[in-house]
Image (cartoon, rainbow, N blue to C red; front, side, top):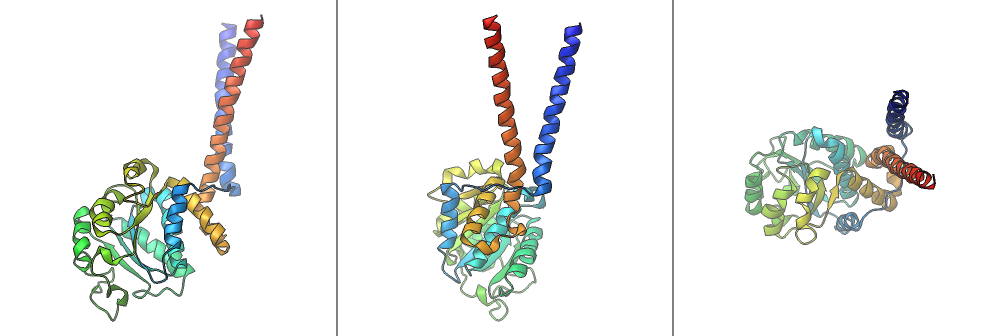
Length: 292
């Protein structure tokens, strides 16, 4: 009984130490904003190169198919894409097929486009077409008649009004765009824009997805889809490329995903260390028992 009691005390104490260590591994990097340099994968580099090659004034359909519930993973992607696209000087056509998507579009326009790129003018350099219900049916209509699918913007301005929305003049269908960028968290999202829009229109498409939804997109890569950012890790890799290419972006608001990867990296290293420690103790005990 005495030995059993000692074992129970040591077991409980050991678990508490592990929980405390994990708590510190997560909170300390968050408090001190510790981050590590990422090494982008070839797919993330391909996405970056695709946008980097866009000529000035290229037309990009910027789709925000997620909600605040998934923003921890998708919001850093959206902001990174928005910064990169604005740095390239392209025209942004923002829209969403999610009823909660307009909240995220408005935030990106307010906190990234309008704040960091004051030269961007509404109707000339970017437009907010808002939300349209219908899922893949909307994509199918936009494929042949974009202005039928999105007849007005969020301010109820007609997309046929050339005086107030001059950037809408050359848009006839999806083929009028040079690239589609979709950040999605489920249905509808990339899995609808690729087969119903990008493929039949012959328009290249890239994007980002929550980690759990990424396996559904992988079969389209690289032929039908140029690549996707997978979760916070993909967003952090993209931010790393942006910082290397554009050093002026080395600001806290441009390192959100990198900072979120800090606690994950430290926690994962701790878990690996505990696994190695546990196996080492087990092998030492076996060796000691064999020697006895």
